[in-house]
Length: 427
Image (cartoon, rainbow, N blue to C red; front, side, top):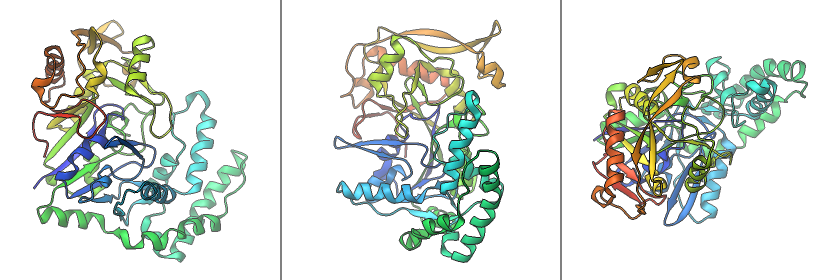
């Protein structure tokens, strides 16, 4: 049975949550392998909207076991809040298993995130202020607090004190903030210890055992390829590896265990936060995409920047992730445009580039070269087969396939779980 990795092909917000949720009834394990609660997944089930930031998207499928992998940074308060909110709404879900090696976001990570972003001024990255970057920094600096540490109060206290020795110097002497008391942090973390103790696992062994037993495992990251700290539009990126290779380290499996990699691409392009965006629109078309598509951040509520589909951006993600399939989302939003531009190249300093450029400086100066395709007026939200789509809509999909070099196996035509066109089975 397969293991499948789902990756965003643009800058996030492509609809990964919906794609994972739709595959949920075919999946035994759904594993979140990167990021934290700086990303939001919006799911619509039976007309009811659910927004989750930390819980794996498969959580609403009662037969699916969900796992928070070692590559995730976990805010325990957020985890508890999201589970409580689902229960308050009458949704009975199983508590996700949590990797003993996952790192914990503490209050001091959130404080540092906010004060350093303000300190950067016009050079700010555009973070959510949720403590993600500082938590990953501690992980790399070997100052991190892991899930397993809250099972040993003595170890936890030692690690928190060691971390704050350095951070309080920075907070007081550079940022003119009050010091953070170690005991406050320790007690806030210990408050969750007994609740999550039964769900802490050796996630790498657990997932590999499941694969050995023939179970279907789906891996989902947060954000997307072009926000990857190594492959994305650095420094305007997240602090982890949402690319397909991140599933092996963040999930605890070997690369030979991955069978399929599905890229999720929106039928146009959006971005939240700072950074270059060649096809960004500042006119009524951009506003129409934003309003019609509901393009406001699920985590921050910030309006998303909107633009036309950038084939070079997605083709780069196809290449570097080894996508076997692409799921195209929000195609229904494009209904009503007479003509739809698609970026097929960049002009950089007077020269044409037919591939994603090597340097950030080049990408920052890239101007889109468009190919204009015929649009369609029909409402496609009721389409369930490819033949249900209007001819110009079908032509749009086929042209995107040619440009990105990967087959499009599924299409989202509305927010609901059932609103999808399946061309090829994804599992």
